[in-house]
Length: 312
Image (cartoon, rainbow, N blue to C red; front, side):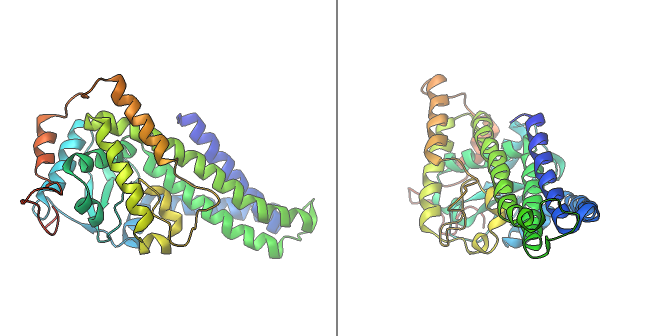
């Protein structure tokens, strides 16, 4: 998605936020809403990565603690021409991963223990290359700001429903009710549009970083099956963070049954395999360093597989 389009969508979401503020308190309410939006975006810019990682109980690991996994991320970051991000592991059996941070110099990538246990070394490479593509495209900041504004719109819409009969409101109580119902839906649509385009773009760039689209395609199929059958309790408690993950982590309580922030996994796999077909039976090989790092992550087969996975 182009920068201009993302900026337009974010401007539309901010406009929704101001509209709800107007419905609550007229012109004064709109100004207050603008100040709140600026404050929340400022907080999100500087602290969103820490907040998200804390919500999911992520633990930072070093190359000494997890040489295989951290070494893999280091080599992929070098291949993507990115600074080395901080690396985190989340202790949950559901296979999944996400990236966060306001810019490439302050980025972090996180993978679950379920992903590291379930995936082959090539599939882990594909997943982490996808997350580094988000970092490279600066999607992490866009998605965090979008989620912050969307959550604030939902909060203000509830106030508009109960306190929207402001005398400065030209539509009166009916207008306040309409805004209370429609504004959160519109915010979800904008958030969905941004997130879906980001996922397709990160899939394509991640395939180029790893050197083989098939690795990520296979990983997505496993991730989809795992996310459907295994609970991610932290994600269920914090559904607003679901769009950050490579696949939707929510399933137990159907938080996103109306609008999904993730495109169809089948469509993503089809696009990746189309890339693989265009580049021939074998895509360009990853760099020697990335290959060596990936080879240190044991696959599920064979007697050499560690019981606790490649992080300790």
